[in-house]
Image 1 (cartoon, rainbow, N blue to C red):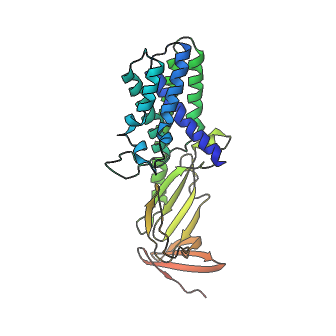
Image 2 (image 1 turned 90 degrees about the horizontal axis):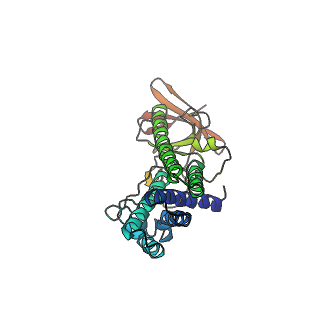
Image 3 (image 1 turned 90 degrees about the vertical axis):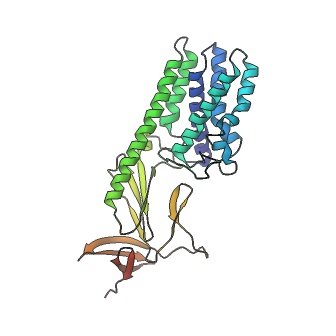
Length: 310
């Protein structure tokens, strides 16, 4: 998927969910007022990014500072539409920023939600930001709301409920796959598991593809990745498995576990595993590096020795 197209749908999702939340919280009013509510709500949904990225300006993506982030929007809205109280504008804008932006960001990538009390980046990573299962029902609900003459909030409310249920579904499925990966790929050392959507930087036409997940396990000696499917049914069908004979340091960076680079930035010596088995109580791994085959035996948990081959 083109990076610019990915960014467009990412921003669109924030704007639409922010607009939907805002629309539900404000009076329906005339057709012009409804258009204004959608516009102001959409602006509130993308406001954190307008004031700075989460890396350079972490306060813009903090729950504590959310009312401050949208204060200028509420002031402008009050000047344009005086019939609604400033406090209602401000409250709806804050809800749009939290629900339309911070919530979606947390579902898709790491953000400093508790800044300044904590610099820790929190992440669920159950969604690909730009997922059509999020922005399409919201767009349809808001379009119906603008066109209808009565009960205009109903389709928007249904769209928001659908998105929330979809997020719950993705969290549950991710948890199920995590447990299945944990049971399927046990290793004799601390292992970290990451389960993420399988659609980053892609834009598949088939909407079912957006429901799929992939997984990765990483430890000091092992790194595995593969497709998980919808419920983990593809585990083991398209995996790659790398083995590091020399123990590596695993660190947490940008929401995922990864290997710490050496000071000389050289890639670690890794073996592409082709076969692994247990024999006489010992774990064996066989694989290749630079067209040469290697065989390793786990002497004690987390300690491997090379086995000479004839």
